[in-house]
Image (cartoon, rainbow, N blue to C red; front, side, top):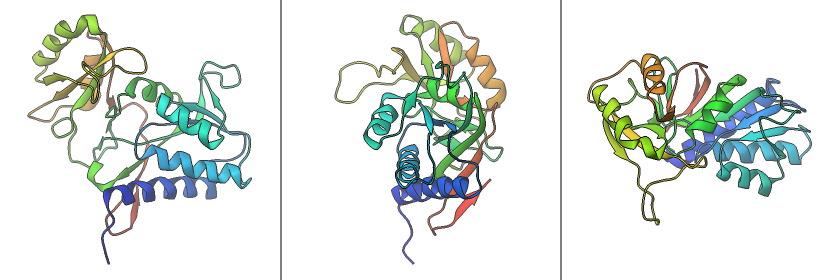
Length: 240
């Protein structure tokens, strides 16, 4: 049997998660759902739209985490709201997103797509948090392989880098592709990518980094542990 590619694993994880959640009654008509960003979250958005088109679920109210997801929802006919809208009330029933790294305790690194701030607002204000991923995202420790994204105010770049270096991080400003200069987030901020040579405690580091003046948000997600669907090369899907 031919092994699934990474892209095939992403689609399998996303569609399996949505199918399971609909079948188990975790996604049903009238729900307020947060929708994430990136190459694994998009197949989940597409699968959800199929259930809406065939009428199996109705009146879904989506809160999105990026311009990418907003555009996809517009194209697929999924109604989009702000988390501040009265009908949403600042809280979601469920959210679905991808991740860049997942450790054995289901702590995460997110923000490879530079949407970590809105992703965290959605994730931390959801009753149920779902992560879909391919097998490469499952790692023993966080922050030593995939760089931890830290969203910062541009004017604070040097003092924030100095503070992060004191915590043992090697920092680089994320540069844009096909545009001169740094990546600018949907919130008008910049991104530092940070690597450690030795593992750190993600829960402690999330708190420590977030109090550095000039930091807007950090890509460690440790405070709302998700249900995780990880697709494997052999076609199996692990649920944690």
